[in-house]
Amino acid sequence: MTVALNDPPYDVEAAFAALSPEVALALRSVRTQILRTAQELEGVGPIHETLKWGEPAYLTQSPKSGTTLRLGQVGGSAAIFVPCSTTIIEDARAIFGDVSDLSGKRGLILGGDGQMLDHVIRAALTYHSRKRVSGATRGGPDRR
Image 1: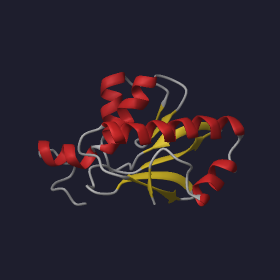
Image 2: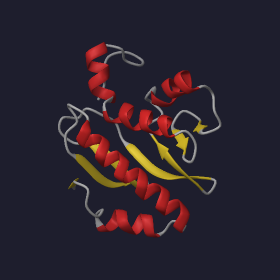
Image 3: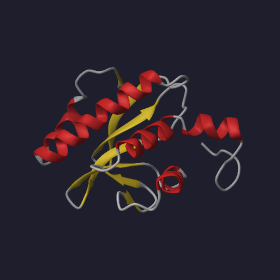
Image 4: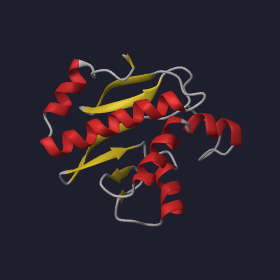
């Protein structure tokens, strides 16, 4: 489903409702930030809102400028995830340092630096378009 700043689809809403109130509130705020950021960024089209692994997920639809952002939790804390095959978290680590908010190669635990969250969202929404422009790919040619 292509979304604007309206209510999430029923299955996504059910996933939010299954979370603790604190985590759900934080992730709903991130959902709004993802959708607003997508509207602001040039070259990022409509966002498809769905579930992946039972968690809210956001993908660029057309053009396929970005990669998936998934909302979930780590140890009871709200978190945002990207595919581990991307360099998004590594790039954030290079910019912001090896802070405890970063979780492995795919996650950012929320509650820390808002600039880091904004960076991760923007980087994910433009991941493939930036790779096409720079020609920089991980492990060879772009294999979308």
